[in-house]
Figure 1 (cartoon, rainbow, N blue to C red):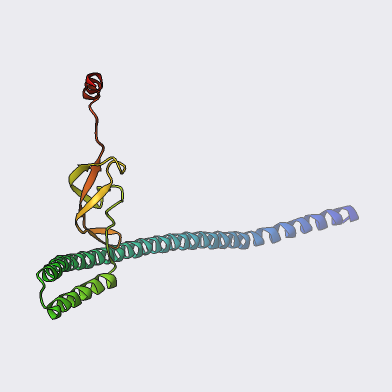
Figure 2: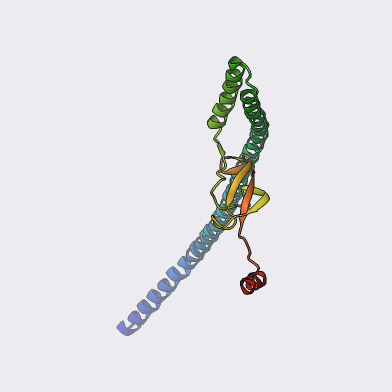
Length: 211
């Protein structure tokens, strides 16, 4: 065999062995690739599950926040209702004492005018002071009347009088005291207000001509 033929055989053998190595490595590469794909699928599935769990947790937290907000609003609403009922009940009770205060005030004046015994007058005045002390403790205040502008929110005008010495609709007399509690009207004042004297221009003109 010539040297050239030997070299060809060597090349042929070398190529064959190389192809055999490549062919033997191919199944392993396929398995590795399949395993990688499997891992990627698992990771993708795990990420989806994680994202889904996060969304469910977020939804649960949002629902919890809404429930807490609703409960807080309900609690505040109930507190306002309870406070309103308490204030209403207190106002109704104090209004009864206002009537008692009126009666006591009249009784004191009557006793003084009738020249009752001093001990009787002092007793009535003592009770009257106790009622007024209660008013002070509960924040009850008298409504200002005489000399102030008429305010329909706190005054009830039951009469009027022509008077040019004061601005029109000025309270010129108090018929019955009014009271407020916590900036709310407990009982409006009954008052008399001023009205301007309207002069009849025709009569004035005739009177002037007659003179």
